[in-house]
Image (cartoon, rainbow, N blue to C red):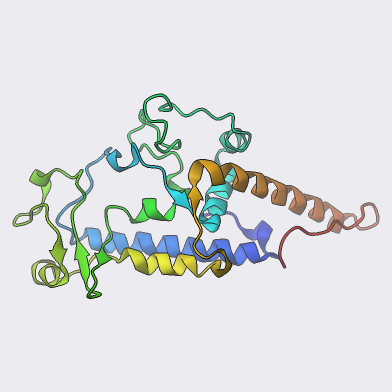
Length: 231
């Protein structure tokens, strides 16, 4: 979880907290599905991340930026200054630059990762009829599937009959996330483009908050600054 109290007076506080609650719900719902799922991601896989870079909503970028600042400030500042060089650049220049091929867990920002990264593998979508459909990830070895299951798309009826359980629906969480900042109209930007700017913004806001705090503690010494944060 992020340390958000410093943003308590701002709209950003409620927005980041709302996104965090969505992330928490995803984790809870996916853990429940994993108890029934006939296919599980193999340990140290990461295949879905190798050549993939997520596009982020502004609120996702803000969340990830703050997580990086709080957990690896040196790396955050390097990304903001665009001096950070990721290990796989020459091999996969279009892949996720936060992926570490030499670490079994691969994702270096796991707790701050984007929405799609949290949803991939253990969620379903819906067809034109509105019913759930689910297909095991193509990277999961078929020999590890639960008996009776193969790599195909399963209907809601088949899942209910075979597992008496349904996977979480991806669009459910997406709609909730889009509602956090409705004025942005769902606009997304490639992570490598939006994250440096988000980190710069967060560093600026944190610097302002620190200045404001010092003003509150010494009201006669420093003029009150103009807040850049929406009230």
